[in-house]
Picture 1 (cartoon, rainbow, N blue to C red):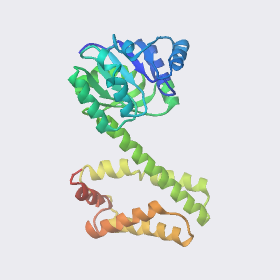
Picture 2 (cartoon, rainbow, N blue to C red):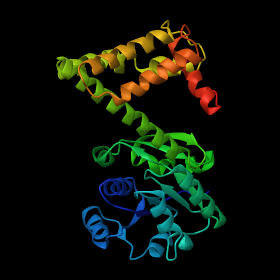
Picture 3 (cartoon, rainbow, N blue to C red):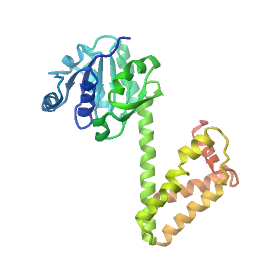
Picture 4 (spheres, rainbow, N blue to C red):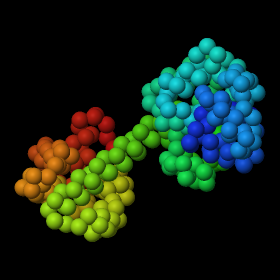
Length: 299
């Protein structure tokens, strides 16, 4: 596979603008295209590079095309619809899709591109505009070992690290799951803080206390999932029923003061059901068996 030097960048909005700028700083030849021609022109005026008049013009000499677009449907449209970029790309060129897209749609796009002799890597990012500007995005990549290695210099011009997640589509899957975990944690914290405030606790005190209690030594990924669940040790020393009891106390407290606790109610229901089906006296981490049984997969 040839070294990537010439890049066509589609979508130079809030995130795409600084990302494409960092590619220029990294020594790549960058041509940009945006649905709004004035946005592409403003990028060139600010950073340099070239603006393409059409998707075909963008793609014609590119070793790779980078997309920073809202979803996989738009990616397919700009790549595969009539007048799209794929028809003008050189055989062996690669699409690097850096937006947050549906991984199933990503695989569909990759299959269509493969039939045209083209490659695809999905490479979504973690981090906002500030990190895009200073080139410290955390980037996930999905694709073959050889293809990801070929794209890594491009990705490292925009981020501080690249995690190879597996075959094409896997990085988009990992990004969605990471945001799902973060979204759950955020509403979990908000729910706890609002219940505590209604009970009479100070929000700042609670937030400060939760750092060592939950984000520090008790962080579930670092302290339970990796060392206990993935190793199948299941030996934290805390019984499953004790966690179920503590969650119920929190929910009962919320009910007693008439505080909203929809997430807590569902979490309590799940822990109680797991205590019945998996066992009340087993280690708390063995709650994983509840999901393993439901999904048919073993962690």
